[in-house]
Image (cartoon, one colour):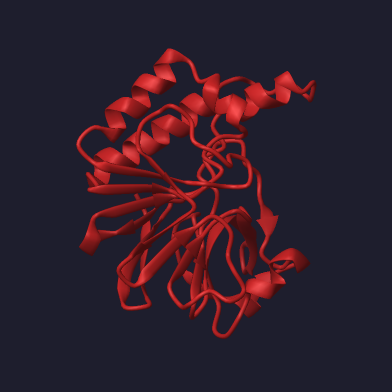
Length: 224
């Protein structure tokens, strides 16, 4: 598994190629925007049908990350479910997979804009969490203190290279905040050069692609 280590607000963090963030010193694993149940929610609302495998694939990748790091704390950084009904509609296999992963560790569900309330799956539910020098919330705040970890935007980036253009989901690392890529299988993404992300790009912003090798790329090298 390719990884990219970086220093942030006094913490050494690891950006993983599967879109997870690992804080080894505190044994904290953070993932954002799982969007479990997305295919079910789209079908329920009469949208274009998608193969109903996204929840199983996302949970399989999450299980691999949990087994790899054996975290003491797992923080799901909001939009863990595509909506509350999708969370309630999880089948027995998905619920059992989550129960096994949660066993013996603290599991924190951060509320997102898709899942504004708790579901009956165990763990604790918070609007945000402060842990040492870092604050974990779903959506970045303009007046946030340095050390903010957020998700929501599903950032993606493209880079021009001598071999052509390459792109993938990515971590956005600024002097005061980190924005995580989406972890879910069917989440899509938003270009880091999109106007919606412009307010969060500041100072010496770097991009870490989830695509290997995970180079730290200055923001001004990213293609529109």
